[in-house]
Every structure is written in C-alpha cells, then in structure tokens.
Length: 112
Image (cartoon, rainbow, N blue to C red; front, side):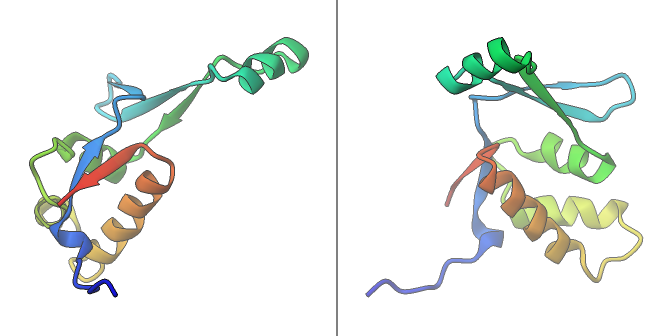
C-alpha cells in the first residue's frame, strides 16, 4: 500500500515541450496547440478545422506560466502570486485548481 503523503505544493511543474507559447505585446501568454494527429488532419480536410489552437491566458495564468521554470515549486509560485493578489486567502486554492487544469491538459508535468 502506498503512503499518501504527497503535497501539490512540494511539486515542481515543468512546461511540456510538446507545446509552444509566446508572450504577446500586452505581456500575456498564448499557448499554441498544434493539431497534427491523423484524426486532426482528417478533420482539417473534411471540416476545414484549424491546424492549431491558441489558448490565451489571463493575467494570473500568464504570471503562473512565466514562473513555471522547472525550478520553482508550486508553493514558491504561490508566494509570488500572493504579492500580486488582493485576496491572500484563496491564492493557493486557486493556484492548485489552475495547476491541476494545466496538468489535466498536459501543458505541464511534475517532478518532486
């Protein structure tokens, strides 16, 4: 039986190299998802779907993304967010949800 003592705050997120991203003129981040699978290519031919999808992050998401450097833990990123947040109460809760969304979409992976 595995011991459940892992804490998300201890993990270090790393950007998935499968995705590219760019910083827009306004300082916000756009993640670019290339649609290159066989089904994607078929859908592009039949339904003229785009070859890539662009996901624009908001200010908080962009700040988190810029701080995912493979060195900072989720807790350290949360400390940075606290400096920019009006409400320190839910910073870590919101960060945990956001990190989970990034992970579920394979935009990031973790190391401990």
